[in-house]
Structure formats: structure tokens, C-alpha cells
Length: 254
Image (cartoon, rainbow, N blue to C red; front, side, top):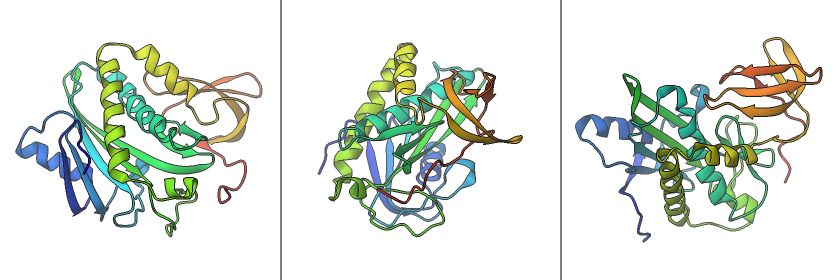
């Protein structure tokens, strides 16, 4: 059994680990970095209200609570960067080809291996509480939902992986990055985030309300705005959900 550097509690099944941890927080005040992990979620949540497919017992499904009162609400995206980096850099130890698809999905080549959903509770001009829900595909070998491009670490490496080992290392990396964030070393985190971005170099197709266009990534601003430069040299800024990545080739091949 892995010894974790944060309180970790396991449940066999829950609707979602985010809900479980939020309810727990109403009853008591969990220690910062407390983690709830589950074998199965009956209503796992993803970005844009999408579900998260996960075969029971095969993958990492967990939520972590943090109390980043030092962080202004307008800078909450820095917390998203912090968590996404921790996961991406842990997965880098298993294989090449991982990247962060803005805002915080983790991809392997053109396939999605991890989704992150962060729910923040604000109090005045501070973030009172953050619950980060994380789903990482570890040992699932077949996917059956309508999701277009899932992949697991087992499919990538060709062998089963220890979920508890990966969880422990992800927790440690999140805590290390969080310390940097708390110390105000945001430039270092942002530089690492930009270097880890999916489609960080070159022109690619995107889609917004006006239609499809080709552009390259300029940067992601501290508040989370994705800045693109199109073929005509015009800069375009997008908040979450305002722009889509258009696939450039099939995602169903290794």
C-alpha cells in the first residue's frame, strides 16, 4: 500500500468525487490537499457539462481540496495551470507525446488521457476553496462512449500500471507546484505551461462563431484567455468555450 503525503480516502462508488468532497466540506473542514478517490463514478463530470467514461476500478478518479485564499479570483486560471502541469509532467515519465490542450485537458498525441474540472468557491476578493476533480485513464483497454478520442496509459505503454503509485506522485507534484504558486513564482509555472501546450508550434485549424480559420498559439494570458494569430496576422482572444480545436487527422490510430 502506498504511503501518501496527503490524506487520501477511498470510496468504492459515488456520484462524483467532486460532489463527495464538497458535501464533506459542508460537514467538516478537511485538511488542505485531502483527496477522495473512487473506483467508479455514477455521474462523473467533465468540462461543458460532459460526462466522463471510466470502467470500474481501471482508472484514477479523484478530487483534491485546496484553500488558495492568497489567489485573486481573476487569477484562478493559475491554479488550473498548476494542476495540469503536475499531471502532464508525471505522465511524461512513462512516455513521450503528452501535452496540455488548453485550458487543462491532457493529451497524448491526438488522444485525450485526462480531464480536469475545478470548482471554486469565492469569498469577497479571494478564493475560499477549490475542489479539483481529476480523471486519468490508466488501465482501461476499451472505450465505448461517444467520446471521440480517449486513450489510456496502458494502451500507450502496452502494460498495466499501478494506480496508487501514479496517484502518490501526482499528489506530490501538485503540492510542489502549489507551493511555487503560493510563493508568487507564477512566471516559472506559466513558462512550463506554455512549453507543454498542445499545438504550441505551427498553424492549425480552429473554429469559432464566425467559422473555421487557421492560426497559431501566441500565448495564454494569466486570466486564461487563449491568444491566437490567424493567417492574416490578426490576433484573436478567446475565453473558455469560445473556440474549438478542429482535428487535423484521425485520432483512432497509434
